[in-house]
Length: 274
Image (cartoon, rainbow, N blue to C red):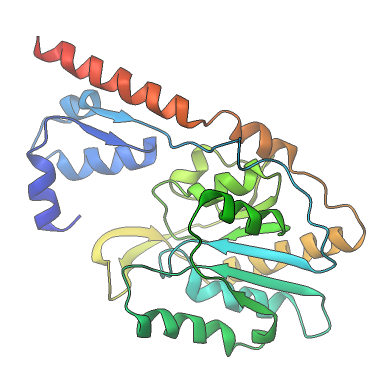
């Protein structure tokens, strides 16, 4: 956090975090303002949820193997290296596509265009489809249902809801083995990109070294590329089945559960003040 963010956060009475990972960051950052044991008691973990009434199992009937990423354009989300992995994994003869639904509402039109241009001018730019921001959850599902595999090479995530939604749709998923989504990702439901080091978080936009995230180098890009090739081969052999482990995981994370945990946290904190 920046000094200003910490100043504001330090004046709260209670906090909510989406994961144990993010709770740990809050404890570490705020312990100079509050006793560490008090923070551990007063920070409640509220996992986010997925609407299974919308994001239900589906199988793509398209001939192409379609890889999908959803999340606003950011270096943190690995958008600077995903195109490199896609180019490394495939060539012009491969029947694959990469769908990017990454419009960033905090960027102006020029900055969004710079990211789009990075993908459109890449080696396999003619296989990349940039999809505009959708208005409803149902429209997001319509896009997801046509894809085969979600690819999320993020350096750090506070939760990664789109990854969980892709699991709920029964899709294969690839993600870095670091940060909040590791609390619902494992070797059974996700293809994990192994990271061995952290680095100071710098993107010249949102992060200026005030924290750390996973370091992604050539080894991680190559592992991602190999996972993408493996998924494509399974699709060609008609062996790309529903990710049932992912579906089972998504069933554990409902918005009703999130709401219940929020109520429990409020009641617990209210009891402390009585």
